[in-house]
Image (cartoon, rainbow, N blue to C red; front, side, top):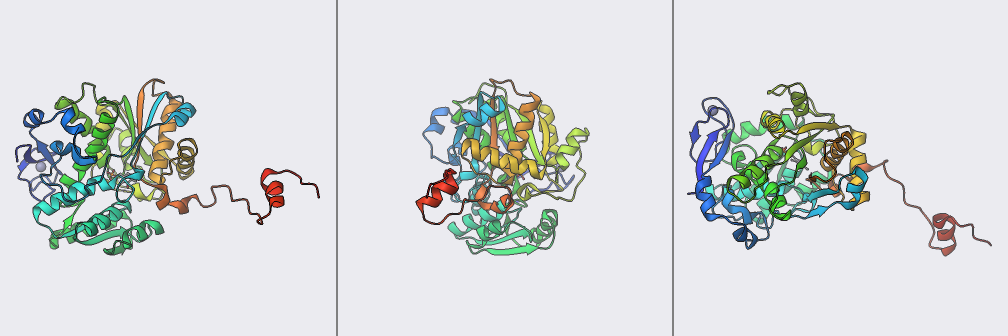
Length: 412
Ligand SMILES: *Cc1c(COP(=O)(O)O)cnc(C)c1O
Ligand SMILES: [Zn+2]
């Protein structure tokens, strides 16, 4: 396996073979995939990628998989020039990377699960599992179904109804745990140790998290092999955010782009902002919090990659901001009415934070700014109840239409 050197501990650097392991035995640091960039550089080119499959697998040279078998249509989502929202925010080159239409389950999680379960199959696992805030369970359930794997998903019991149905329909075992995501994650780690399952975000996490790099690869290719000046992305465990950064850096390392990687702006919900707090207080460690926010998909109180996300914000000259429940809903509505894109609460958080940074003037008006929209609004519609206008109710009569809708007084 020439492109991969192995795994290495992010803390002490100790090296490990490519196996379904995720923690350093010596310092308990997380393990990460290490590539042989010299070797990759010899094999990779823009042309080769452009002629590859119309999915994230066009970047296989920078992914830890030899033989993709799961999630073959994941990725390759639109990058949309947001003219209307840009005008509203005073940004002439604002783009939306729209993973709300990812395949097959309408969130960015289809990327990471495609990579994790393809790798799990290479390792010989027959059972997929995860600890989830909602979208991950949807994706693992769907991709386990299509690839013939058995499946167990663990979720907090109080998730949005449509996120639960969106897992159940694929017929996995859904375990709803009384507690928040951090409780679910702790229990899942214990289960992962006892059962020989591929927990995509636990024992297969080093491979899983690599899938998020494709959010950087696609944006660079879609911009004509350029890096944006700045990006805004949501933070839950902090994995997505740190891997977008890793992705842009890799493209530069292997010579596919010449630009420096972007400034990384992170978005958290005010009701669950442990990474934002650490960044603002200049800490490199995370003080866990108890989540209380409508943005359930990003409500992780004890984020595994929090310290690395703080580092990325600093290293990239970026920043972090938070959004209240009201601001999250306003963010959802703003993106919908300007760009016709219906995102969920995580996307609402991202747009709310994008707006705050734009108003603070951190972006030059001509800079290329990309906001990552990671999930679909049709899964969290209940949060909008009471926040939208009502339909205008009429009888099937032209008279009533003119009177009640057009507001014309019709003469009798
Ligand atoms: C999981 C998720 C994220 C972020 O996940 P990380 O744990 O930070 O990688 C962002 N948006 C949505 C919609 C998600 O489901
Ligand atoms: Zn270590």
